[in-house]
Amino acid sequence: MSSPTPSAHDAPSGAPAPAAPVRRVRSALVVALAAGLVLGAGGVAAAWALSGDEGSARGGAADDAHHACDALRGFGEPEHTAEKTEREIALNRLAAAVSLSAAAAAGDREFKPLAEALRRVQNQYARFGDFNEPEAQKHLKTARSLCADI
Image 1 (cartoon, rainbow, N blue to C red):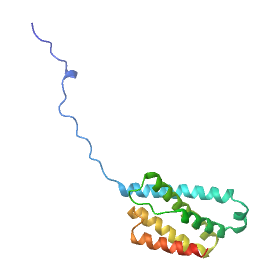
Image 2: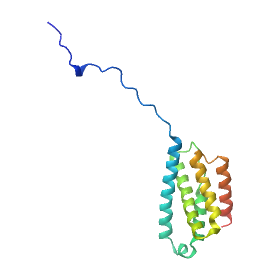
Image 3: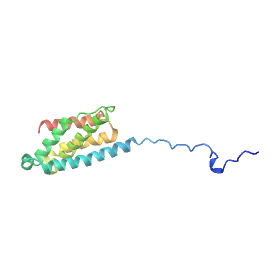
Image 4: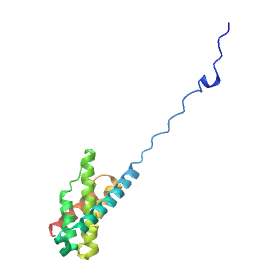
């Protein structure tokens, strides 16, 4: 008796295909995260401004600047190794401060230095992914100093 011959589809097809190498796209991820946070914070800031209380209707740019500084006071630079939730909260607070300061600067040029300092902090983070970077710290110090006068 002869043994049955295996069909062609039962035969092994050779070595498994090699897996594609994992590419590190950290910088693209950081930029995408920062852009998403800016857009999200812009929506939050717009909703905050539109739903605002009587103070927002009276104060306009000054109230936006005050709220930007409130958001900045709630912002703490998370460590690079911080938990995802902690980083997300910090980044959203920074993005809210950036958006509100931009609204304040649009309403009154007096607040333009605050908006520029906060935008630079956000840009430095998007570029390096670290708030401890010296330029980011410099701009944070400037923004906090400007907020102390608001």
